[in-house]
Image 1 (cartoon, rainbow, N blue to C red):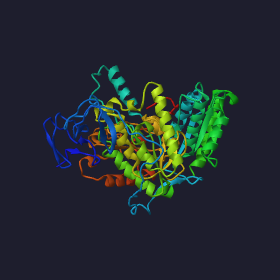
Image 2: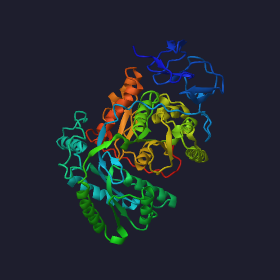
Image 3: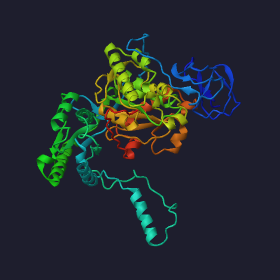
Image 4: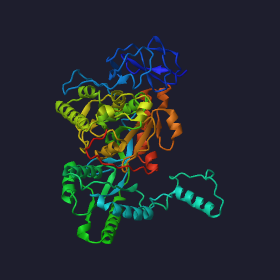
Length: 550
């Protein structure tokens, strides 16, 4: 029989309903019998004790809120009776931390088949990048994209074009009714022609709205982010278009590449429109030079690499009340396995670490890293407050509807993605992950801004948990969607790669699920399987301009 409720930590004040429970239901919680005062929807919480107004409420072993009014045992937790409150923190550790690393015996001799770069990094894919230094070049990027994708066999047949053609035909013959009888084939089934370059997984065309018109600092951040993308091991090289007069000057971009990796040795083609003259000359040169470079990039083949060459990004979006119980701790265990194997993990979304800062600080081996983390968190929070917001505004309506009542509650579950390993480095936005172990990367909670940052900091695989369903992907890094519940996996199978619903049902442990996820990563990293986001061509790219984004 499936469990009805669950608590996360022994000292928690709240329990989570694993199924819809009617008012008056009697449940067993940690040896106690509790009668529910209200109907509790699956994923939502109820009180395990009485609270007076202003009492702190705990879950995941930390403060997740403050009672707005008296709450009695068995009462549902809602935005009406629970407000945001989180744990205080400082750069000083308040406890000693000893990590119990997981058993990695079954993976120690395993490898994945990746693309070895000259700097020692290993890619899980082999892409060529084409992007502008300024938004003025976006149209030229799109022109080049259209030419290359069609000619090289990367353009997929669009089933929706066929659908519209069918509708037009029915309309012209007077047979059109309501259109419900028409079907749409999968957009991922066929391409326009066979691929020309066997060892190139695709060309990725990035466009953006930056590079000029903002501050010089915005341009510098953009250049560092784009440099991180070139340095990402999934990228073979890049073609870069410049207008000429923009803030993001070519020299600024070259300096950024040097700061990201002084030993970067990848082909980078840079063309300037104002220097070359006509748009036709620019596009022709871009296509010709890129094609020649692709011939060389195609000589690279997949070769075995140790799992220590994995750098996994850890992200969540569209979270629900089960995310912190199933999907997040499962990929947290996967993170621990990768770290124990000598690889890297990158935990992003600083607004969703609100309330667990001290726990992470206690896991830091370097006091300077702790001070850097505290400084970034406090400045980020202050900037949000000055804009009339705050981290407490992070939960979306969808989060709240599905049981995540406060940001501290959401954050406590979100932090489970980082597992239990020591924190080896703290990275500000666009800084590259070079240290093995768990890295903390400052990004917003915004899904695409965060995944964009993870790839720019070197992630060659991204694990993305979701309870509500979100299609987010990335141009160069496979994004694997991990559902917190089986209902979502069954409803949206086109976007979900891995279902952790078995954890909720009690059929699998966190450790079993995390191990299965690592096995799946190896298949993706070796090119034997593809992520749903890549299949759907979900190539999301949104640079963060360091404004208030939660």
